[in-house]
Length: 350
Image: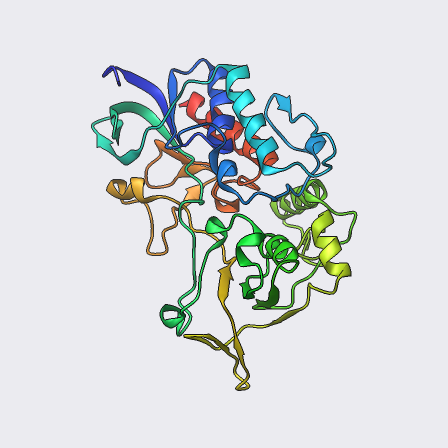
C-alpha cells in the first residue's frame, strides 16, 4: 500500500514506454514507482494475436541500455519473445513496478498530483502517463454496423485464423495489422479486403528499423525548416515473411470501402452486395487518457496539447508512448527510449 510519503514521480503504465521512463528515472536517482494495470509484465504485447511479428529484427529493437536478444529461427521476433524481453528488462534494472494496480484518476493536490488507484493514493511532484492505446480500440460508425448479424471483432479481439475457418470474412483497414491478419485468415477463409485508399507495400528490404532511420532524418530536416517526404513515397505496409507469402498468393488486393453493412453482408456505392459471416475491424486505437479527466487537459478529440512530452496546461504531467504527438516514434520500442530520456531530463531539471 502507499506509504503517504511524497514521491518524485509516479509512472502510470508498465509497458515499454513506462519501462523506458523507469530506466532513466533510476539513473537520475529519482524516488519513483511504476503502477501497472496488467497482471503480469509485457504490456500490450501479451494480448496480441498468436502469430504477430515485429516489423524490425531483434538486433534493431531495444529499450535503453539493453538490446533485445535474437529469437532463434525468427528474423522478425514474435509477440511472446517481446514479452519475455520486457519481463527480463524489469528484473535486469530492478524497476519498482507495482501490479495489478488500476489508476482511476490523477488530480491536483496542492503543489502535488494525487494518483488515485484501487490500491490507495500516491502523491507525486510529477506524473508520467504511459498507458498506451490498446485498451481503447476504435471502430468507425459505419451505417448498418449495429444491424450486422455476424461476428465483428476488432484487432484487439483477434487471436488465431482457425476461428474463421470456412467463413466469408471482410477485413477492414489499410495498415500493417490488417495486412498481417488478412495474410493468415485468407488461408482458412474466403476473404475480402477493403481500405480507404489503395494499400502500398514497402520494398522488401525496408523493415521497421529502416523506417525509423528514414523518419528520424525527416524529423531532423523539419527542425531545420527543410522539406523531406520521409517514408511518404515508399509505402505503408512492411513485408514480413507472411505478408510476402500472401502477396505471392494474390491475396493482397484491396477493394474500396463499402457503403453500409446489412444484417448479412455489405453494400457498395455501385449497388454491389456481398454476403459475409464476419467483419474484422483493423481500424486503430485511441489514447487511453480517461484517468487524466480530473486535470481537464484533453481537448474534445481526446488529445492533450504537449511541448515534446510535457503537457502545456499541466507542466507536472508528461505523456509517453501515444504516438508522434507525444514524441517522435514514441509508440515503438526503439522510439520509447528517446522520448523517455527527454522527458526524464526535463523532470530532473525541475
